[in-house]
Amino acid sequence: MPDNNLYYVLFHTIHDVLRVEKILKEHGLGHELVPVPRNLSSDCGICVKLHSEIELLRPLLSDIEVAKCVLFDGKEYTSVQLP
Amino acid sequence: MIYLDNAATSFPKPKETIEQLTRFVTTVGGNPGRSGHKLSVEAARIIFEARDKLVEFIHGKKSERVIFTANGTESLNFAILGLLDENDHVITTSLEHNSVMRPLMHLKQRRAVEHTVMQCGPDGRLDMEALARAMRKNTKAVIINHGSNVIGTTQPLGEIKQVIGNTILIADACQTIGSLPIDVDRDNIDVLCFSCHKSLFAVQGLGALYIKEGIDPRPLKFGGTGSKSESSEHPDFLPDRYECGTPNTPGIASLLGGLTFIEKEGLGRIAARKRALREKLLQGLSGIEHATVYGSNANNANVPVISFNLKNKLPSEVGYELNQREIYVRVGLTCAPMAHKTIGTFPTGTVRVSPGYFTTDEEIDRFLEALQHIAGQ
Image 1 (spheres, one colour):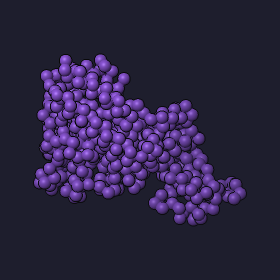
Image 2 (cartoon, helix red, strand yellow; image 1 turned 30 degrees about the vertical axis):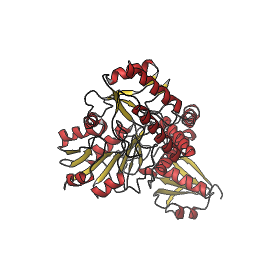
Image 3 (cartoon, rainbow over the protein chains, first blue to last red; image 1 turned 45 degrees about the vertical axis):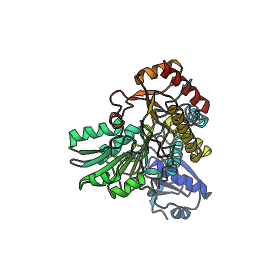
Image 4 (spheres, helix red, strand yellow; image 1 turned 120 degrees about the vertical axis):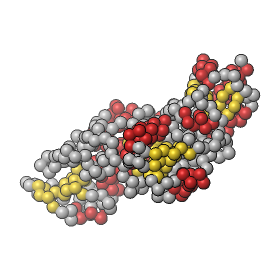
């Protein structure tokens, strides 16, 4: 996936971020944990930058609540519903 | 040196504990989940992994319902102060530690909480019919010492939960976790409180509690969580609702090592070894003419915590003599005065001997030999 069309997925707690990391690793889905971009949230934590198909994420989350999903098109960040 | 005070804290620790602790303080070191850099994330991963292992170890369902604290006492305070309200009634056994009795005394004075103490027999047995009779309409919780820190007796948590029904069961598992299998799901335990520095082999300064879904104690601390930082209100999601401030990450790393060790050895094997140590000690003590052992060995689920006295000698004198021989035990009331009233050793207390998984048969023999000598003096 080209770097100019990326999803950042934010969760409520670092615990949930790490639950998601574990799931993504188990399913071999490309991702990176990165500091939450300042313009998305004032949280001092980390979020998931997804390097794989966003549609694959939702079915894997079970009860983990998504706090925010953001699409970055290379220029702007736009809040979107997790597809 | 022979260390026989594992009921206070386990020593030595397995190499896995030391490796994880060393790894954290030498190569990780970051503040977990706060800063977003790699060391911070790695520190958070250690906590995540330990929480995951711990919930699996006690057969709980959701790891975010495992809350880290400073020790067993803080876990029990958390459950007791967080769940009991004005005019609630609570039941405990007479074997409880001060970490249960003192917060309850505080609540009796401040929130008019009524407290019934179930008198256990000198063998530590709890009368289930009497427990059923003690239940009232306003009984909010029953707090049970799963394994006595004085006589090593264990209580049947599943059976107790059946007697008390929907009333909250708070179990103090400080002496049993890591020595016996615990299944919060099967036994329907609502809140499990424990320390991590005894048979879970973490370093001192770490405890935890597991809170079953549907049980919602009031948080006792508020502050920085690294989450929802824009809000001046404390978050209500777990585990952040109950954890704030920089955690004891080195301690949690050491717990991860301890749990890894237990996993490798097998809890069944550890439990069997501890039963054997208990048997060997009891057998040896029965051969010492002037020794009186308290409690009972009727239930083989008892943990290796044994209290005894020598005729015409104060526990402190026996402790002193053992200490002179570099044999380390505990003497006195072991923070459980009512348990000593139960076994008839208040206010003098007892000599408490508690071997650990690393105690050898030879060490027990040397201890018994020394005791024989002290008894004959």
